[in-house]
Amino acid sequence: MAKFALLSEQETRRFGRALGERLRPGDVVGLVGDLGTGKTTLTQAIARGMGIGAPVTSPTFALIHEYRGPIPLFHIDPYRLEQPEEIEDLGFEEYFERGGVVIVEWADRVAELLPPERLTLTLTMLEAPPDAALDTEAPRLLTAEATGERYENLLAELAALPQLKALGKAAAP
Image (cartoon, rainbow, N blue to C red):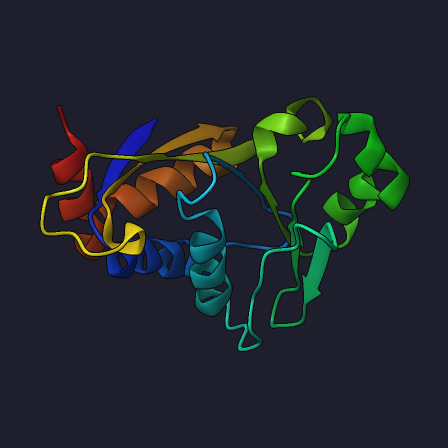
C-alpha cells in the first residue's frame, strides 16, 4: 500500500498520467471515493497517459464508455445500480478479457465481481486550506492498494518516480 497527497487538480492529473503511461492490456484499476473526490478527473488523466485524445466523461448514466487508443480503455461506473448483479447483464466480465484497460469507478459497489488481482485507488478529501477557492483545488489523499505481483510492481514503480515521490512524502504520517 502507498499513499499520495494530491494537493491540487494538477497533482491528481500528474499521478493519473504517470499511471496511464504504465498500464498494459488486461490491467484493472478500481476507483473508490465519495462524490467529488476526483475519480473522473483521475480517469481523464489516466486516459491522457495512455495516449487517448478523446474527451473522457463520467459514464454514470451510460454505465460504460469505451475509448480507442493504443490500448482501449473501458470506463465503467456502476453508481446508479442498486445491486452489483445488475451490471452482469451488461457483459461486465467480458470487458476484463477484451485486451484493454478497465477502470471501474465506485469499485467498492461491485468488488465481488472484479478480478482478484487489481490496483485499487481510494480518494479521500482532506481539509482544504482557507484560501482554496474550489473543490477541484482541495487536497486529496490517494491510497493505492495493489493485489497481485503485477500491481505490486506497478505501484512500486509509481512510488519511485521522481515526479511522484514528493506526493508520497507529503502523504506520509
